[in-house]
Length: 415
Image 1 (cartoon, rainbow, N blue to C red):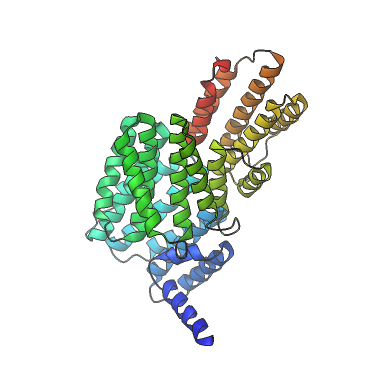
Image 2 (image 1 turned 135 degrees about the vertical axis):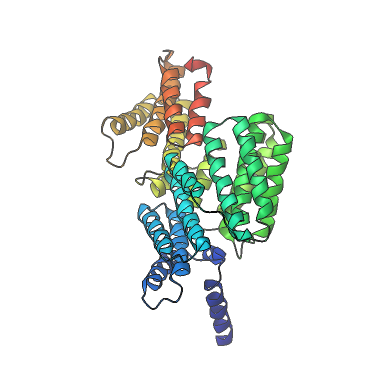
């Protein structure tokens, strides 16, 4: 028994010393923060033999912590560590590696909080870099450039831009063969982009490509070793299956999507990776009715930090509360929900963002439509309200929220 325990500790220490940080998926959020703090201390020691590499590792650890919980402080620490790595750079390759880490942090900040200016800043940083001499470094630059371009294409929603970004990702993926962590991240982004473009254009080729990438990711990520990677791929599979089921009105496909969402959610607990768990619930709530307590928990895990996911979770919770009240004609409940939204709009929190405003506008429109079905009073100005909400969401880098406003604006009652 004791030999077994020592073997486990040796395996863990070996994983901690490797360049692949996939082992972090096995530990909880608190332990990720402990590792990040310890690495930051180690990188700052005068006796540190390789301060550049140590600072890069500290930055990656803080970035992983931020990715799971959305903490702005962790993003700041990741950026500070990347800048430390840049100061310790001794050649062009090390300079590029530090810049890549800084750009990755900027991209994550965009993913968490929106604001396309962050993507523009990261692209500007990449353009200013010297040409990489090492092939793996050049491949990493190309991969990050493609992932950044894909985010801009998603914001625009234009099919031509989505297809161009997909081509960039194809080329970048070819150069990353054998670099598993970077390859997995790029493949997941490519699958998301192909799924979005395929659904928008009804293009079977793109949908097949997305399915192939996701199948490869799920097969490569075992639940015992990479539960978060597996859950992210399964959740995207489920979202795609649910969208196709809605288009075809296919009950079997809808049931398969539910099963995939359940499989994704079962990979870990909410405290292991709060944002991943909340994201899965928000995706599920797009296509099915969830227990209200689940959506309340998802909103609680994401509110107050200016997160895009927080605005999405709030919108879903309000939507389901409105649907429940509207289905039985409970006008008092609709008034109560509306009062809460008006209070947020009139007296916004100091932490409120334009995305929160857009989310509340969508909620107000839903309430007006639900009330109109029972009172017969035609709501006015909803089309303009939703157009403004969609424009605000896209301007601040939240295309998913914009799409919700646009779908609601297409209902006949808003005309």
